[in-house]
Length: 363
Image 1 (cartoon, rainbow, N blue to C red):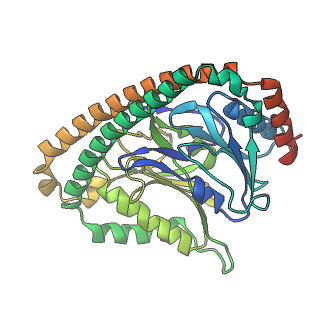
Image 2: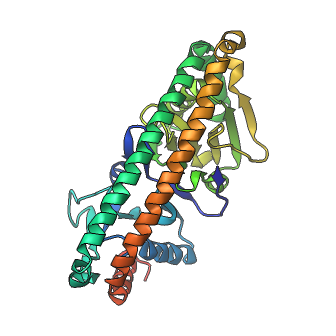
């Protein structure tokens, strides 16, 4: 596990899951008042560098931002969200293709295709197509390993569920929220942002601990190795927070994003609810720690001990293999980028970056 510490707010908006690639770019587009800038170009053509420059300009002006990292290469950006401006610039190419629904009104395409020398690329067409295919094959293999790991982790969650006292969980959440989430006055606008705080990457699982420290001063941490109890805890807390009028940041589980929340932020209260397990250990000072075994019949769960240990070991090995395959895919992508970089007029990319800065009021 790579836990990243910084003063910036960092998230992912997409990752490879047991069900394939899952992205939250569309929900970002639907956030109220969000103006989208959709970058179109090839690999290695300066998209990430352009966005990093815009992020730096915004920070130098004291403007709050969220950096959106690429799960296939966490050192690269897939987007930047400018919070005060209600604007976001994102990589709108595969595997998270975005096309404008209301061109000019809510989205603007930032095309960098004009910076490419097509003739220079055409001379290496066979090599380029081979590398694209090789990259796709490696990513597909990695996805199958992730799917297998996901099946084992889901089996463990179901085993824990057989021993959990969910009525006790519900009573606990009512008490917790009554203490920590004072109801906001009528008229408060509840809302939700969807972000990923962790993902499986070529570096292994990456967890943005620095984001937790940037967004919250108080942490309620649920220690749950299997996920059945924390799943219900976070679902119920989410519902209570929205019902009480809060704007929240919901972070789905990178392995089972459709039906499990791992983390929840309530920025107005500087409060975070976090799930701690092997895949994203939460090592923070001053946390309120809650061991989810308190909601479980431990004697009954002991009957599943061998099964749970096997699932955990096997899932860890599968995810390690997936990360290795993703690293091979990244190496392939890096080689692909060399062909594109050689065909790019970076002066024209720089000019596009200046234009973007002006559009975003960062010039």
